[in-house]
Image (cartoon, rainbow, N blue to C red; front, side, top):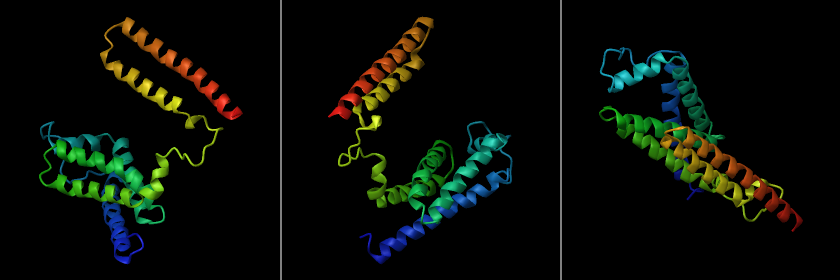
Length: 203
């Protein structure tokens, strides 16, 4: 399918379409201008107008969003770097979609939802190349790479669980237990990881 003309053209112009949409949306933000010509300051705080006004008033963050959209859109439109563009584009459009669903944007979630689906389609199209980001590459073991050991993944999950407990901290004792947990996992995982690494290197 990837070698056929029409599917390739469809993918190329899909990149152009959603890439252009991001570049277009980025220009006003980078210039430090409102996305709309009307201020939303007087609107209720739970409205989309007030939300956009808050982002606009942030100044630097408003421009930062614009630069992020510009980079994602340009990478997609180059075609050469479109794989990287699709990866960068995904968290941005996912965030935009959730925003449009969270506030009253009328039919806008349909547009942003279609853009999100188009981005997912582009990721699936290039999955043969992108899957290296999540593969452990079992056919090319490298004993010199510490990160290839499962122990570091387990440590990551342990840290995740510990940090998720931060919200339940109510006093100094809980904080102390949290710090002890982090220190224990760090030291224990480090010692075990180095031992396993040396053992694999010898083999």
